[in-house]
Image (cartoon, rainbow, N blue to C red; front, side):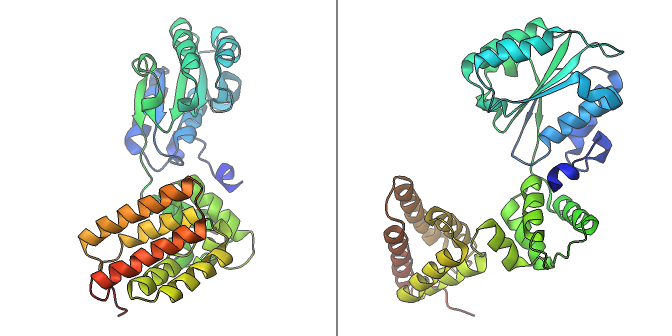
Length: 323
């Protein structure tokens, strides 16, 4: 996997989250690490930062003093009582007296497991330091939060994503076109891991990576097609919009709920639609999405949504005409 192959090895290799990296470097210099919580959206470098911290702290033998668990798979109280406690209670040999345990996706741990972890963190602070990685720090119980230094990771900037993707494409000798790069940025939404995986999936076909190829390999509708369907509906062509919808579902093989979400995104990008109508249409889209989640028929609900877009176009006085 390219995401693993091009993962930074040291804190100096990480080019984003600069404030966080500076704080972690100060821990390395002091040879002391507090219990920590790394929180933030997926694909923003939380696990990578933890591994790089361990590498810089322990140098080449860091794997012997590091234990990494995915708490979403091993999240019960027995894991804390047995696996975590056994690792935490033994002292590390060498200059640094403590080991490091990384609990990935810690917000998926049960409350009982978190309570047991809290006691383990208290008892074995001298021999083990914990890094809890999660998307939502609010799901970590307050007693654990109060014992940890918080680190808030944010989405990567557009330039960071572009630079990394271009570097990987160059190293792998992949021909990526500008519209293909834009498509990857669109679908990744600041998640570098997803962006790299999308690039690898598109490159596996062995052809130049363009916009159409990116959307086809990830099974997502091209926004251009979605906008065309919305325009047809708002301009009063219900049958044309419905045919376009069926064409997209057959071409990309997407679920109705995915189409609804993309319609929701594209509606707010139409400058021609007045603000008050965006509010009304958002309410309609939300209702259709709820019905789909409850098991309603996709074709019926999507047709009803298109019908409402046609009505909105009539009430707006002709809708968004093509330029």
